[in-house]
Image (cartoon, rainbow, N blue to C red; front, side, top):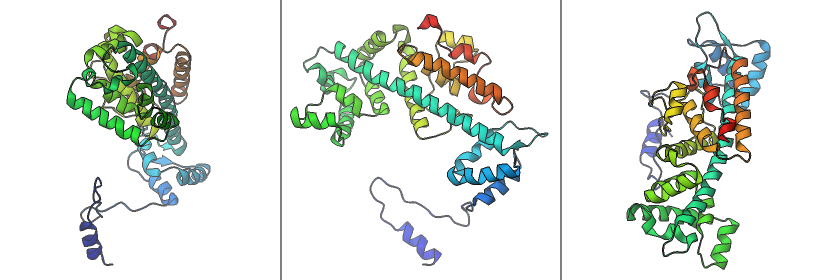
Length: 337
């Protein structure tokens, strides 16, 4: 099939509902050429900005590395290395930065997972305590009077139904079979995603949200807490999909600072789109989980400090939005436990 015929064929395809039509490259919008592993190594040595050097041993390592690591997701780390006219960074240094980002992602995923579990458990406990309407406590989510609008109630209930309807979990199957499809709130909460549960929370009347924050966490955090949960949800999704966190700004869900945290770090209110701001939000939630998360968190910070110090020539605080006293800001002190 000639090029013009292929183009006409693709452009006239009837799109499947919910999908978009793809396009093919043209002379005006050329697609980059595919590079073999050997060509990738050659290309990295000839970059105008931050080229990488390779020893013979590093070339052999790179051949295996790029066989199992997508070059197009790795290449950004070269650009994040400190720029210097007098120094060419090595392939090993770039890999160190890549692995440092993996370390950050792995730990953030762990702690946002703790937060997700805290979020689910505290919503069940506090909302069921608060609810005194006409429905059973386990069916409070079906009562539209707890929502801030009928439209939001319908939207949430439809989303919940789609999630439950497609579930094959033992709990859902049991309640369908034995309870006439009456699904309690604590089962629904475990079925929906972190993001869906956060959206549910934003559709509740303020009295329910305030009761949850006041009793499960602290009344003084009413203003900031939902922004912290939203940030944790976004970071968990980011890390679960192996997206980069080092050297990145998080404009989608910037958490709000506590005044005392902002002053200690020497930050402006608008300096909240950084990794540091998100880590501070995570800290302020998990400090309530004294069972195991706090010790793990402080251990993570110590390991993070060691990694930064051992690679200070390539890992910069600025790329993460860290102030000089970042450890003091992020550590959970014993007085807070």
